[in-house]
Image (cartoon, one colour):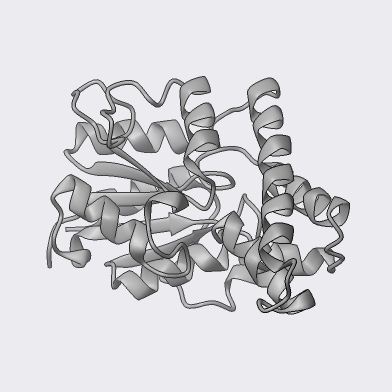
Length: 241
């Protein structure tokens, strides 16, 4: 069996502590721009590209052929980005339980770490910079330093299709020179994370239950295990040969 060379982690809810902030901001933007949906609908779309969320919901409400479809998508998304950037620029941001320990365990054992997110690049960078996780990354957000905290950052705006498609995982593999998906573990806190790992054919696609979804909720989706926190992956890595 191939050794693990890459761990791909989600950001908010997986490696970034999230008290459902993104969900709440997304829901507020929907309400303020005339998209009235159940809160459960928003929860079900967490992990998606956020632009795709607005495109999907406006299509459902008025149809893509409607004269105002594209303008409505733009207005909703612009408000969301404004609210989100204000939040992450001003509020406390901290790593999720066990995330930093996982990063350093991987670094010590020659395993690359890539972070993927349904957020767009500007706000992704705000988060990374405030946590000091940007150090050592080049213009492609790939590590060029042995002192980097992570090895790669991929946002949904850098791929054709966000989760649950496997594009972000595959781009991370390409950026870091990993060709065999059986050398990759994917971990995230949403069904979209689990499905993207399964669609990428990785060795293990794992859920983490201290984010958006509980363990009982994640159990309904294809997975190779549900962990209580990202840090629990360390013990799992130590037992994979």
